[in-house]
Length: 121
Image (tube, rainbow, N blue to C red; front, side, top):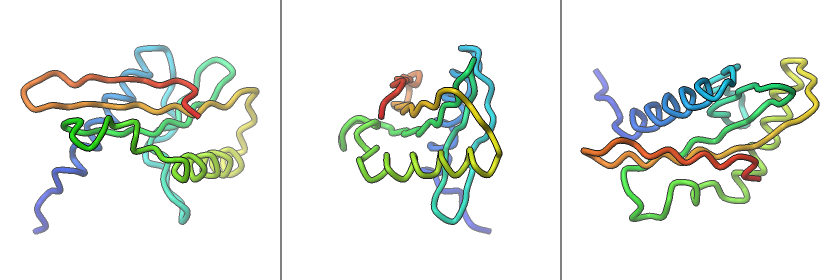
């Protein structure tokens, strides 16, 4: 049996926290970990007249920078392309599209800190 990957578990926990945050703010989660050959979208949520594509970055500390710094310009371009593909494949037409970043800092022994950067790029 393959042992669990602690980094993957940390990422999954961060995505769960982000999804809960959006739901408590009145959004509906449409997709989680949507994959195609070109990449993955962490979260796709919908609010009134908007579909939000959300990249979630979770870290245990800020020794390598804050989690949101990991969303580089190249990653932003990939997420935009994936968002357009998701809309096409789902046949979704919407007035507004937004790209958010959720940075989760999950230090051991502390409650996670969630920073939602709305319309990040």
